[in-house]
Image 1 (cartoon, one colour):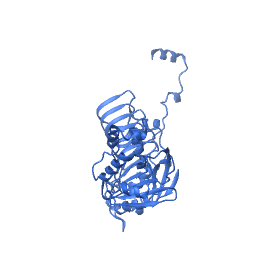
Image 2: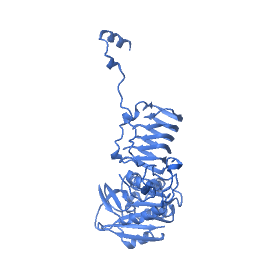
Image 3: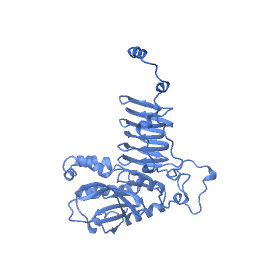
Image 4: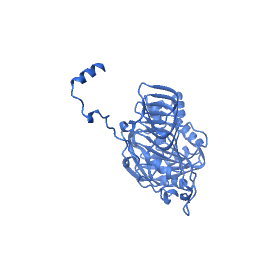
Amino acid sequence: MWNRRKEDEQQPPPKPVAAQPPVTQPVRPLPAKETSPMSSVPNRPTESFEATRTGNAVLGKSAVVKGQILSREDLTIDGEVDGTIEMQEHRLTVGPSGKVRASVKAREVIVLGTLHGNVETGDRIDIRKEAKLVGDIRTARIVIEDGAYFKGNVDIVRAEVPKSASATPAGASPRPATTSATPTTASPAMAAGAGEIKR
Amino acid sequence: METRNSSGLDQFCSLLVERPGLTLLDLAGANQSTMAFLTNLGHRVYSDDFLLQMDRCFGDGDFYENQADPQKVAQFLDAALDYPAQHFDGALVWDTLEFLSGPLLETVVQRLGTMLRPGSYMLALFHAEERAETIPTYSYRIQDRKTITLAPRGRRRPAQFFNNRSLEKLFSDFDSVKFFLTRDHLREVIVRR
């Protein structure tokens, strides 16, 4: 540090642009036009691991945590965690080196490494290529890339629909809210379980 | 990836459309296509890769000799079929039963029967080409209720070949067995618990 300062004094002052922090690519929001809860991977380019970890708290590769993690910001885990993780309003990313053995509650979960435990998300879970997830999932949406390993139960939870918009179309059978994958924008045919999947 | 029409799947799906909120077992390994199809119909899906579990337990050495090792068999059953009785309303076992040798096959079929609720269906596929030394294996993915996408997973030597009579014997403890013969040397079998 001190030596570097001495060297810096001999050099011309840096340009203002160079003094700015490195520009990071912001995390892209979900496409607004997406209507299916089961996003088709080819249609939605997935963010790179580096893109998902910008602006996050990070548990590095050598970190080992045993116990409860409560986070009020997005969190990336590259190390090992054994316990519980709660971050209802934020995103958890289990990095490629991450080994998590915990029950997880988060707004969004992205798995690139290993996760053993039940996962509950308010929005979505992405299980990326090479990821390994063993546990039960309760989520509104799920994406599983080819090459991912998943063992467990998937329970799709429908988002709460305002009463005015929840009128059942004529002829459509009612269905339990806890198991429906139908988004609020889905067509009546899908809501009635007609089996037509549009990709 | 290839696609093929499947009358067996169509029959299986007739159950799914009639009754939402079912708990289903898919042994092909988790994939987006099947998961989307089944959950869009309002069902819970339990997913596992049965072939991968077999490889983990029996893959070190002779695959079929290892299936006679009681310790490895116990390990396999714990890893792959440790579910409560009458937990599932339907099971997609695809072609996985072809790679289980005699005694283990009977144990697995018996356990699948225990895991299924009465009246539920199981879909299984069996190759009918008896002279083939190896058969192609796939990751089976539901595209729609009549169409399966086949993602290749190499070739394997089957433990044995089945004809209609041997399949009826295999599933003799089940309520009924229905065959769908296809042009590509594949028997699609719907078994009713």
